[in-house]
Amino acid sequence: EIVLTQSPGTLSLSPGERATLSCRASQSVSSSYLAWYQHKPGQAPRLLIYGASSRATGIPDRFSGSGSGTDFTLTISRLEPEDFAVYYCQQYGSSRYSFGQGTKVEIK
Amino acid sequence: QVQLQESGPGLVKPSETLSLTCTVSGYSISSGYYWGWIRQPPGKGLEWIGSIYHSENTYYNPSLKSRVTISVDTSKNQFSLKVNSVTAADTAVYHCARLPQSGAAAGTLDYWGQGTLVTVSA
Image (tube, rainbow over all chains, first blue to last red; front, top):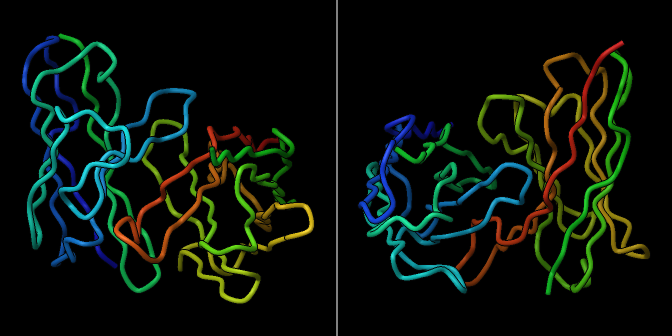
């Protein structure tokens, strides 16, 4: 089983600042099957990035993903008020899915 | 617009069976895609429970496999989750989702329901 570890656990930033979120896998993950989600309380999680670096439909270009192998990054170039949320990375392999434990991006 | 909505009891007694249904609108579940369940215990992260395709192929999280059944009712455009012998550790918000297996977004969960809280308590 591939374990995803996200860091930091919490990121305290101000609107307009840059957010850099990390996701590290316990073994190599196919870039094709690494995704990022945004989750706000009481809402459905929202797919942001698939294939490690492709934005899902309707996702603003301030969100970008990068990485390969065991190290992946989600970057939010300039935080907007609506971006404060919890972010999860997720991998797929052998018909199974696993998630990181999440990074909370909170207002400083 | 694809929409998913979970429904079912919000309170289940220990040792009983948790049963939830996901109703899909805007897309026929018999047309393709895998469909699945994910849960989030209070204060914790997301956990994949299992997935199903056309009632033919099912895949379950090994940690839950012995207690979980996912099924499809294409006539109602719904799929369901049953978890047997529940304990307090099964208390969570349960989400249903669509799981593409092909195309650029393969391996993701591209549409989700907003989730329903199920509490296991006597």
